[in-house]
Amino acid sequence: MERIAVFTSGGDAPGMNACIRAVVRTAIKLDMTVLGVRKGYTGLCNDDIIPMNSRSVSNTIQHGGTILETSRCAEFHTKEGRARAIAVMKKYGIEGLVAIGGDGTFRGAQALMKECDVPVIGCPGTIDNDLFGTDATIGYDTAVNTALEAIDRIRDTATAMERLFIIEVMGRHVGFIALQVAIAGGAEWVLLPETASDIEAFYDRLEQGFRAGKRTNIVVVAEGDETGGAGKVAESLEKLYGIQSRVTVLGHIQRGGSPSARDRVLASKLGAAAVLALRDGKSGLSAGEIGGEVVFTPFDEVVSKRKPLNSFELELTDRLS
Ligand code: F6P
Image (cartoon, rainbow, N blue to C red):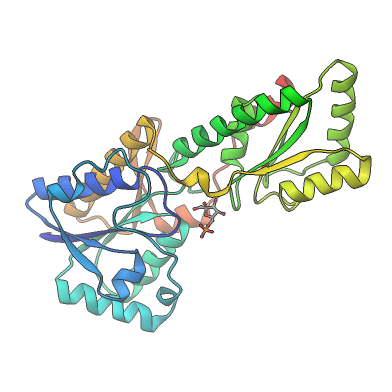
């Protein structure tokens, strides 16, 4: 394999630049030519391709976002859109692709692979950590630390004014970020899409805490929780029990910022592993890290299997708050 392309797709995640850098530099050392596709599948459909060399990725490992930019590409869901992408790949003589992104990115890669014979290896990049086949996705660790820093700050004002805060963190379908920051931030309650949220039980706990002298409470809600998010939880507490609270939605602040050391290392490992896998003739696999070792999992499994939350961690918030 002499000519490969790399792109980032879907929601950006801190560490994507470190992954691009690893892909580019690993490939160059294997005497491959590397092209960068800008804006994910949108760039592949619209011929937005740039040459990359070692210098194109200098000074990028410490930056959030993605130097190749990204998008959620509706066009790629159509056969016509994919046909254009395939024509663009032919034009540039692309013999292999590294796709950095989440489940939508890997579904796109699966569709593409059914219609052309260019091998694709994925690197799991999303703050949500909702991909099977890796202990953590690229960006997750940074997002957890960013959210935690914000929660610590909120705890200061909550304590100063003896308030209840309801804080919403990202996690469209899963509660990985929410559970980690709830434990690390000493939250009193955590609401997760994976578990049923019992508002009555929380009210009892608030009452008990109040009797025991607790005046400040932090509730962490994953955006995908069935209650509908932090605003809805605050409304219910007010309506049902007359309890006042303050709501903070952390939102996209969790997606930006300099990647943590852990994310930089993970991204560097998986980017390099992806290129080595292409060189070895592999395809249709996502590179991941389990127990410190690089592993490869078929896209089919990565997008269809659900990675469970840790059951011991699930009980910790109740146990420790
Ligand atoms: O990338 C994952 C994620 O950050 C989710 O946590 C969130 O629900 C979603 O992306 C937001 O997407 P967008 O930036 O397109 O609004």
